[in-house]
Image 1 (cartoon, helix red, strand yellow):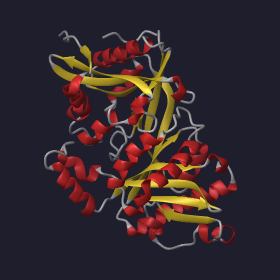
Image 2: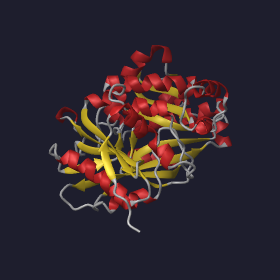
Image 3: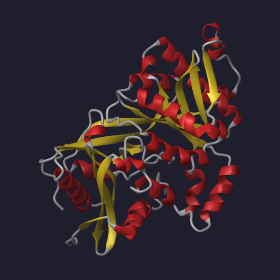
Image 4: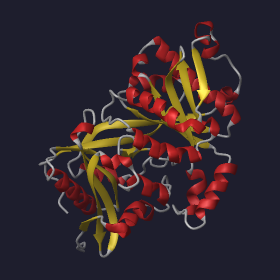
Length: 387
């Protein structure tokens, strides 16, 4: 039986924008491992009017339609020359979601590639949804793992469909699961109590009442820490604040902390509760009544899982004894705070596969690989699967 044609259209107007944002929860409903993100959060991430990221790129979203029904989506973006990602192409795709049909995936990729080629692209990387500082990669391992807040999910057929379009691995991103044990919750000696570090290391909770000032410190550390990583694009202050304003609504008071060495901030961490625990029955919708349920649940729910959503340690400490002490203090602080928390496991994610300096202490602490996301690349001009 012949399949009907796939029509890929630019996503224009409010109706298509809303369809673009909600499409994954319609395509993947009830699939193991998938949890629908909240529509309002998607609006904030993908609206050029709400997300300052789009000041750095030219972009276009697309929707795939068959027999009058949306069956896939993608978006393409081209960074301006002043914000070129480190080692990666300025030409990128993101938000690739589709039914299990190679022709649909092929049509979406062709639309994105044609748009990027018209702007001079020779190599494409992705998915970045919408940036390296947001949701990155195609899930290739861990499809049935527990869904985690702000981590992308896709069905297991999508990597193969993308590879049949001529795409190959560029980098893998590793996420770890750390199960909190009784040993973690027990009192014990810490590195900040050792004589050589007692007067040098200090850990403090982030001051959410002074978010603007804290954000500048965090941003400075984050951009320095990640500046040598493949694909890195500096977080702008406007981008960070648009994220921080949302995070402070869901981050518990003990969720963020700063580590100082010799009186200077050197590292920070932000652990978020896994909101998917309380939003599953909302179906992605906050309006008209979901928002009141959400607020009540955030205040009263005993979260069992969380994610280390943001972390950074200054580059000057990488591969140095003082840096090792800061990382160990960081891990011990997560353990210490678990004593006042109901969280039973934390996801550390993500870490570049070749970042041994970060992977070694995480694995030494007992964390296990839980998910792997893959960034793909393609040199344009190589034939892709035609729809």
